[in-house]
Image (cartoon, rainbow, N blue to C red; front, side, top):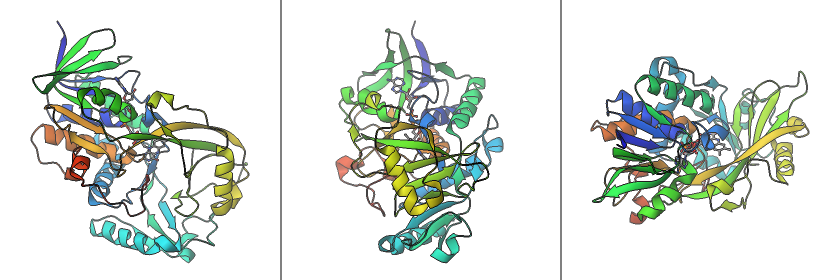
Length: 392
Ligand SMILES: Cc1cc2nc3c(=O)[nH]c(=O)nc-3n(C[C@H](O)[C@H](O)[C@H](O)COP(=O)(O)OP(=O)(O)OC[C@H]3O[C@@H](n4cnc5c(N)ncnc54)[C@H](O)[C@@H]3O)c2cc1C
């Protein structure tokens, strides 16, 4: 007899773990989570950890605001494990050509209730003393921006879900989503075992196209490489105070454990990856030079620090750098939540609840119509204030 459940979630990253937990809490019935490896083994385990709510459109501003509230109040909201949320403040320095756009975004975010403001260059030093500001026209600032810990979040959701009866399958790759009469009815695992389900949720991040393509829906998800370098400060050397994503030099910086700092340099012409498993974890040649050049422009005191580690992962991005979340076009009882385009972390506590509400017939806290998977076929892409990229 095949195993059966009401909902089978494929993928135990941030999205799958959050969604499964929310489904169990919403009374959606029995839930299985199936991962080809183990919880957090995908891009969720590679995240930089940045928490910010500076987005172009209401849907992502609201999801990230709700998600951050859950991170802040994790003990009350989840009650198991921790989010690792640490408020450091978030800064988005911009050049003159983007200053008006940034001011406008800050006003739109404030209208939605976010505590944010636009800082003039002479106000930035009070938040982040390490920055060189010659070519900076100002910065968006969120006092409650900061960092969180994806691995702890996934562990918390998973432990709580297990206590609520979750059927967790690890080292269990889904080879095929089973469809009968136009509806998803379960999954077939490598080795042949079937799990029959009333609904299937695809939460497989950068691997999603591999599962959905054979069903006739080409997920509009491309993959591009992203790398995080680890530098070590000298004893007593001041670390970055805020989490900063610099729209001038395109360097992103945060303090990490001990004397380490994590640095990302967004590079033009980053090679696209065709298959997620082709994305190598070690840093590529030339990346160290890229981060040192960007740091020299914005954080000169950090530019010469020794490189002690780093890793690479993939951004699973859509044409408008917004995720696809909702029913898969043309197949009943099949849902997808993927393509988070490099910025899903802080929104995942919220999207799990929204999906669970939609699947159980409740009104969700955030309207996610703008993330509908069929929007590309309709030509209704989301606008991007800063152009294509993870700033979204
Ligand atoms: C280097 C890096 C830095 C980032 N920094 C930030 C940041 O600072 N802030 C932010 O908000 N976001 C950030 N992100 C983005 C964020 O990490 C992602 O949006 C988020 O982790 C996506 O989660 P996910 O659950 O969709 O995907 P994943 O975590 O990739 O989960 C997918 C899961 O599916 C499983 N799977 C795949 N195929 C199958 C199959 N056939 N059968 C069963 N299981 C399968 C995988 O094993 C994996 O566990 C970053 C991403 C990267 C790569």
